[in-house]
Picture: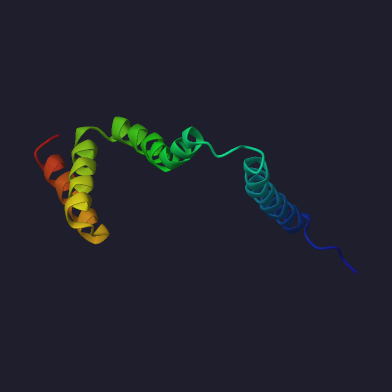
Length: 105
């Protein structure tokens, strides 16, 4: 009888460890928030958190990809505010990026 390839078990152990780490991160957030009183200041901070995460994700991309990416993002946000259509915002953003790149920006 031969043993299975150890590489398979190593991959399985890594996946299991990461699943456990992910679960513990999620549970610890819920448990810790049980000890924090939800004052108006904390509520405002929690409400602002998704926007700050988006900004922290998008700004490095704009810095790396240049003016065309910034213009495309502004156009997509404006489209989303005016029309509330994700598909339209996607098309507008991609069109502005393509046009800006075509004009050398």
